[in-house]
Image (tube, rainbow, N blue to C red):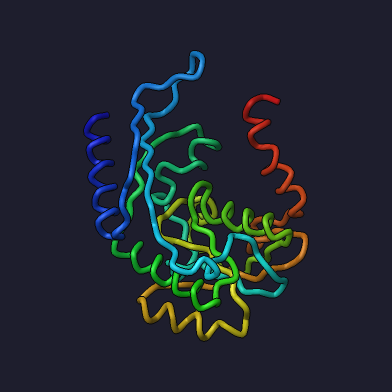
Length: 233
């Protein structure tokens, strides 16, 4: 456990130095219980960044039907078992807490720099990092927040479960106007960041390349009641 903690702290220090973002506080709880149930060792950090112009920002919500939805940080949607390491999918579906996620700081720096540039220039209408739950959950959250849907057209290579729910790092789902696709591509090329088109914003439904086709209202209900259901309500 202490080796893992030391490894975690070193990673935080490396990221802080690479991004030039100060870590201002932190806490590590190694022994935690709620009632008689243990929870995982939990490192928590607090960091500070600077936005010079607060008007140059965007949120995670899809904005308009017909906008193109793009995956920043990958040239394709590919499913491989390593992307499931430490994922919510493994724990929720298979009751497994295994594996060690990996990250390339250099790639993360490039993806974040490109994403910030897209936001500053007004090309990104929305941006949402792929984190807990993977790509499918990320897209659903953007659709729910925008009260819109999504139609996926990208072809998946490899395992569909890993492609939809794997938690590979350094990926951001961005929505852009079709007219801005060339400008978007130029920014990505400038920062040497890979990307691929996932599909388009649509009304009412979430569909993904023949694998999923559900009404957004149903997904929103599940999403909104998740804490209540977890608590047994």
